Structure formats: structure tokens, C-alpha cells
Image (cartoon, rainbow, N blue to C red):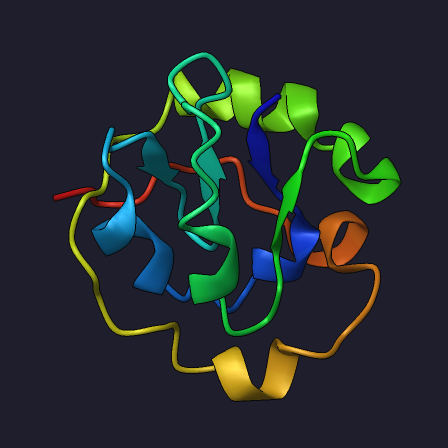
Length: 112
């Protein structure tokens, strides 16, 4: 099992999770984070750190559809291991549904 970042992260990108990860398996896109599923050790410490519950175990039905997205972009985006401020629009977007179709960006973030 592994943990997956879902589309709830899009346009929020809270990074509380990256500081607690013991294996540094988070990668940064322009407007969301992903977890490299082959690097995740399933410790679960990141899940409760996400203030918008965007991190789920891959056994969750919502996470299943984002497993390949996490796998793909974790090989393309830079690694992130330090907490950064959330996106300026995070509060506005944290409860929006259907963010993937409208707002997902495949552009990389800055990383560490």
C-alpha cells in the first residue's frame, strides 16, 4: 500500500506533509503535490498533516484514480522536502470539487 495525493490539493498546495515524510517522497507541481508510490513506505505520517485531507491510502476508492497521476508526475517534477507557504488562493479553493478537470497543471514546481 502507498499514499496518494488527490485533486483536493490542486490550487491549495499545503506543504505540511512534506516536512514529516521520512523518505522525502513528495514532488512539486505548479499547483499541487504528488507522492512517488514506489518510494512511499506507507508510514502514514503525512495523511493527518494535510489540512484539507488531500492525502489518502491507495486502497481508498477516490485515491485509486490518482495513483497513476502520482506515479507519472513524481518522475517529472522536482522533489520537495521543506514546508512552503500554501498557494495564495488556497482558502478559496480548499472546498471546491472537480478541480482536476478545471485547474490541473502538468507544469513542474520549484522544488527545494
